[in-house]
Length: 213
Image (tube, rainbow, N blue to C red; front, side, top):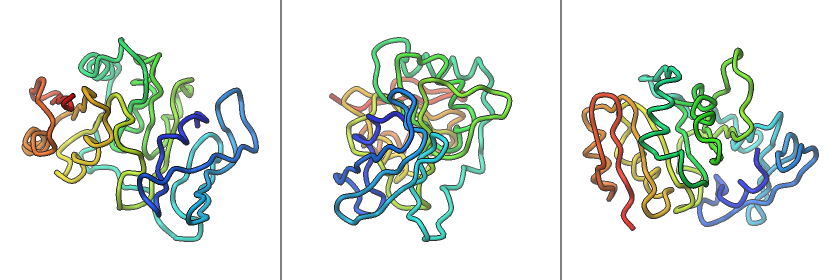
């Protein structure tokens, strides 16, 4: 996990705007390989093991957020498509990748070299080496998205997410940030508009909308 990521993650128990403090046991540069995130308000601790952050409260028995049944298998060209529609060749910041795309987050990271890709849930494919610019987060089951609002430059989902889920990802975007939904379902464009986003483009491959300035 990138150490600075603690500044944009919210405590899963307290919710935004409560941030957490990173306690580092082992690190490589600015990458925390072992330690924990601690909440100074509720005293919860969330372990960081082998670079992965586990945001389920310890001893809770919670399971990671389930991936969408419409899991999308991304080829390298599809990762290029996401990079293009989110304009990841320009600028820098954080990109939030939903759990249904987590296995393909490294492919997205490879085309977004100046961005930190924050992948929610799952792990990388065994055949793929870990990317230098990716942080993996195992989120708590259900509840709100464990991030602070307005901190992400881009985000990506897949399938036909619920309107509430689209609203949460839209709220995570900074002004003019973009949300892409890969292989969008019939309700995706409407959910984007309901979340206050302006549609940029949409077809059967991807729908893209931007947060207003």
